[in-house]
Amino acid sequence: MTDRRLWSYKEIAAHIRVQPDTVRSYRKHGLLPPPDVVEAGKPYWFADTIRAWQSRRPGTRGSRDKY
Image 1 (cartoon, rainbow, N blue to C red):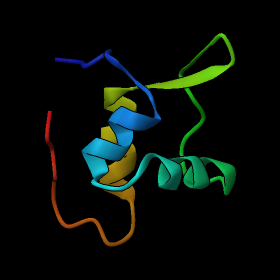
Image 2 (cartoon, rainbow, N blue to C red):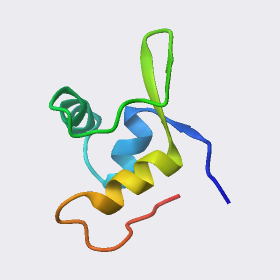
Image 3 (cartoon, rainbow, N blue to C red):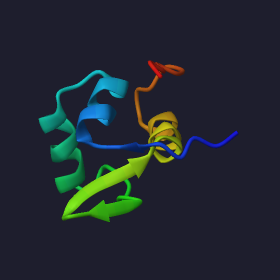
Image 4 (cartoon, rainbow, N blue to C red):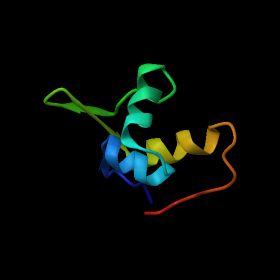
């Protein structure tokens, strides 16, 4: 099953347990995948995109799924 819900910085931050500004910094430094959708200038990522990215992040110890 695929999860096509769109997540903003806020949802990503909650999922990986950091502040939204940290997620913005990740994007600024090229550490976050490109957004799947941009609406009105705001980036959004599919939940599956972020879960896949999280599983490849250094230091990730298994899943920390909140959703």
